[in-house]
Image (spheres, rainbow, N blue to C red):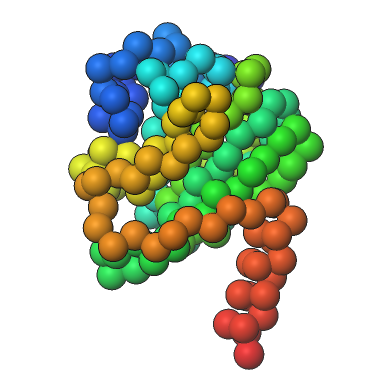
Length: 190
């Protein structure tokens, strides 16, 4: 296992709700060459950036390959957003905890958010290097369609004003997401 990325707060600022807020330093770590079924381990600390829960930068996939993640420890939310013809057509919030596994189809951009009191540790099987294009829209729009914040101890969804006409987000468990994906693939096969 080798340390591949140390994401600093400065590097994460373009996608934060409050870019000047203080927060964890480093913002998160990514280790590669994990071995076995997993390629990477991402560690997201629990300290917030102002009121915003800590997260990864997030990205789309320029290659048509799904990415599977396994939650090793902690709890959080995987935010997925689907883009068609430049418009966000779906936003899903998958609530995850230790032991959960989720496969993100390549049509979704995604970010991982730590909503727990301890670091969130996530394995993934992504072996292909990300391209600059994977991050461009996320950077241009200052993050994903929603920011997750803590408002008086309650999880809050704050809309990102750099997006227009975004559908209401849908909250799902990993099991509900899997059922939904299975149903969608069954419809597309018929």
